Length: 179
Ligand SMILES: [Zn+2]
Image 1 (cartoon, protein in one colour):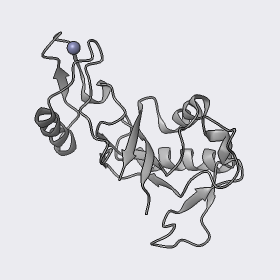
Image 2: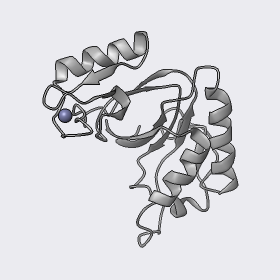
Image 3: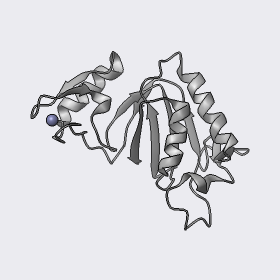
């Protein structure tokens, strides 16, 4: 199983829209040859439906070390769920003054997000109010109906992430997961 994952979660897709957005992102990733179907899914070794394609290195930030496999499988998820950073978890920070949310308060807010809708959060330091998904940090938790998980991949390039967001939607969030 994987040790880390780069997760791109998109926050505007409704439950109804998620399958079409996931399909659009999948088709684009296949067209770009970043991913290819996994002909031999193995529940222990490579359980994902997709594996890195012949052009996978085009997606990563540093291509100088392009020998050998880029990473493990790719999972494209279209069900509403929590996407968490595992052992990397750190509460997000205020988008205005970078004050960090209290961990207990953050977990309560995420539970509200999952059970109902994305909450607005007011910063205790500067009184800025923003949607929870607009608080910053790559080690936070997001609730999303569509997401792509790159298991054990190196950092992804900015141009690739922009291209992917064209298909997933306008509010993509990156989560660095460690298992
Ligand atoms: Zn603030």
